Amino acid sequence: MNDVLEIAGITFRSRLWVGTGKYASFAQTKEAVEASGADVVTVAVRRTNITDTESENLLDYIDPKVYKILPNTAGCYTAEDALRYARLARAAGVSDMVKLEVIGDERTLFPDNEALLYATKELVREGFIVFPYTSDDPIMCRKLADAGAAAVMPLAAPIGSGLGIRNPYNIKIIMETVKVPVIVDAGVGTASDAAIAMELGVDAVLMNTAIAGAKDPILMAHAMRCAVDAGRFAFRAGRIGKKLYATASSPLEGMLI
Image (cartoon, rainbow, N blue to C red):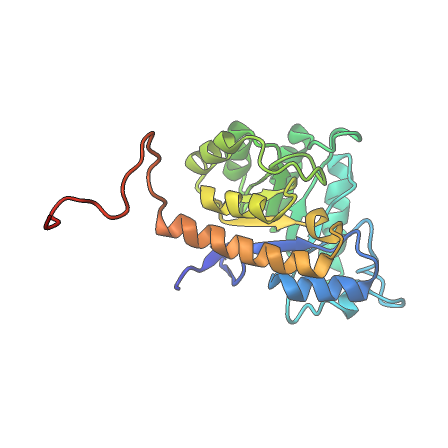
């Protein structure tokens, strides 16, 4: 349908991006990723062995020739740690892209936006393609975009909470504020949450726990694939306006009585 997502000169065929944590096995991860139809797969540098070629490796199951591997700095609580793991992933030949996370609070896992902005500027200066995970703050998203972020990734709700989009109005303002793609990240719980995000007009949705934590991760991955497609189609189609009173589907005007 000629609806291509392009970021930093890279073409993405799916608007559903998925993570690889919390699955029962690498084999289950592979099956869920395939069911999702995603071509972007995020991998935590700190928590996986993607840089270790001597042992069983996630990349033995998720082929970098088939998928775009997006290393992330999950679990980093300082800008220095996040920078270190981003550089490690690139040095290992994984990717020039990085999903940048700098966590500011252990209980809520909300981002430390001050440290995030610093790390974004540094990685952009070093030639990385940076996708920063941030709060749903239009001002911070604008600062990240101005710093050279390839896209901004505001949370819908706290990581792993499954609460869905708590503040759709901020997401809409972010889309009006920045000129880079907006990818909703964190908080999606089920297919309807993904569809709502896409109906708002965001460019993509990234999720992990909503799929990996489901009773049937493979079936949920397929559900999320359908939901993202449906939400995108609905956004492009343009919904009808909301009215207080009914409007007949078959008007009487012009009918022969």
